[in-house]
Amino acid sequence: MKWTYKTSGIPDNLFIRGKVPMTKEEIRAITMSKLRLKEDSIVVDVGAGTGSISIEAAHISNKGKVIAIEKNPEGIELIKQNAKQFDVKIEVVNGFATEKIKEIEKIDRVIIGGSGGELKEILRLCYERLTPSGVCVINCITIETIYESIKFLEEEGFVDMDVISVNVSRGKRVGRYTLMEGLNPIYIISATKEDV
Image (cartoon, rainbow, N blue to C red; front, side, top):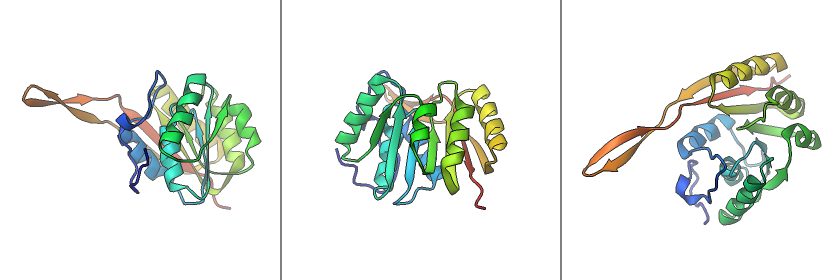
């Protein structure tokens, strides 16, 4: 399917899904706004899962490059299938982010959705490769990860940090009534590499 709209937040049901976690459409929409993408941005999606964020980024940065890093073989296949379904170009990289980021010379934007316990090293490597005013966005679900993210971002020298908590409820029909069902809260942290 070709997504013909300029807005982010592609409906979840349009993606090919497996057992790999996927960032929900409302969270993707906010994440994309925090990334501040340009047409020619070089975007790295760490822990890309099903590729939902990579696909959203590829629609916007269609004159740049989107690199999806994922270590789960099922995730790799899902990213490829979804990229084909949405007719976007994504460079799909299988492996650990701490190794694969070293092979990338320049990054304009990075989104971290999973770190495999190597968040500090991933942030260090990304900071070295981020262009001035480059943006890093981290999506996390645990208090421990939000604490570590803020600490590590500050240690690396990121500035203009922004932290938000997002709680989304979706309407579910029960007979003739609609009940609101809450999804897990998500923390979205964004920060910038100082332009020196």
